[in-house]
Length: 108
Length: 530
Image 1: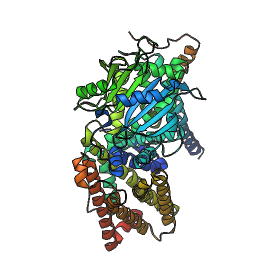
Image 2: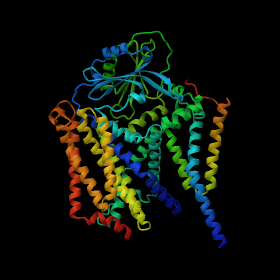
Image 3: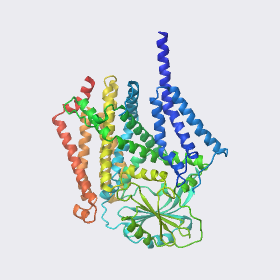
Image 4: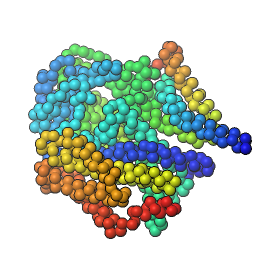
């Protein structure tokens, strides 16, 4: 009886965690990627690919995060991927404002 | 084929259903008006009775622009936009770039509206948001486009709302693909003799499967357009340009040349338009002049994609000599993957890359999307009605929106045709839509049954659609078919025929329903029994 209650409680917790990861967390991580990607993507022939790719692919980036949160059987892995992406890109943006990251690739 | 585990499929079915049911009604409104807006240009010509045979850029514009330049205060002569309006009239927007109170870049200036004889119709002063409102002769097409783009909610909230709807559609499309166990089989499965629930589920599935790639493209490009200026540009500018949106815009769209602020008279614009038309085989859709009246002035002409291509074309001219400089990408200073990607987003969303053919395909698939959205919501409600009888109100709401929205749109078209000659079409096009919407809501509240409500709204829509061509001819004073065809406006006759046929089709459906009243009613009851 106790075990069943624990399982139900754990399942409910996982469902909520999944909803949070697919909802607000996916939005925050997508926005962080949008801000961070221009700082590491190559500029391409016209020096604008790093600016255009995040803008164009923003809806798909959000969708990928959303479906990953829905479909990955391990909630912990979803949280880990979201955290890594958030910290990497958030860190890049912070270092950019501290003057450490490259701003924009110059057009050759 | 994607095979998910049982639990994952269950999750995807829930995601598919909830993404549709939570935002489905608004999504239906956006998709329906977007479907109609595919032909916004043709609807504008049909409703306002365009009969001018020569485009504004086919005629000399140089003298007009110089004359307007002399009338314009120097502070607004930084840049000029030229584009066609109404019945081959010319819109000329002299403006300067400045920052608004929130620090966002805006264009402020004087907008001259010229008729097709080159006379000034109207002069408006202010920012782009203030001067580019609907006009008496394009109120109907503007109403359709504004409903589709922002649901008449003020910016940025309207764009954010439609962007979220785009994401909901993206989720519904991807989850719809994932839950198909037999994708290719589902494309061709229509069990016409099965019970009504299965028949409707098959129709939803077939229409949804065929239009899946289209739904994905529309949702992706639509949410891109909605979020581009509202979230995307400010965030990228914040990270890469310390919040300087103008610097980002200059990097992506600008023409980096050495500044030369010496005053210089602008080159002959007629040479530019004729050369651009000769090079591209058709007139420009838009002309932008940067640094107007300076030695470093540049003129950019924008064109539809070449035949067989999907990417729009832009040509760059020297602003002083009017000499052709080069073909440049729409986005970026030279050809690049990012520029191409951003450049094709518009044609992919608007379906205007292959003329009427691609527009017709986009219209058809858009209509299929409306059908999928509406039937999807109905199936969701019907499947749960047994568990929650209170969902009857939702079924009623679905009918009010599903059939009330087309009713409201055709009423607004009728109101436009009646009030355009009086000069009050801008007000009455919207007001009539609201009155029709309220009428549909009241009918939804007081109609004795959902079936009767459906037939009432379909019948009323059919009657109004049938009368639209007659209103256009008799009340709005539009051209007859002979004249329309003679001036190269086959869209006028085509839309007349489309309205009459669609009206008769709706009336025929109502007539059949009154003779066999149990068929539609059995949808719900059979579903509950199933």
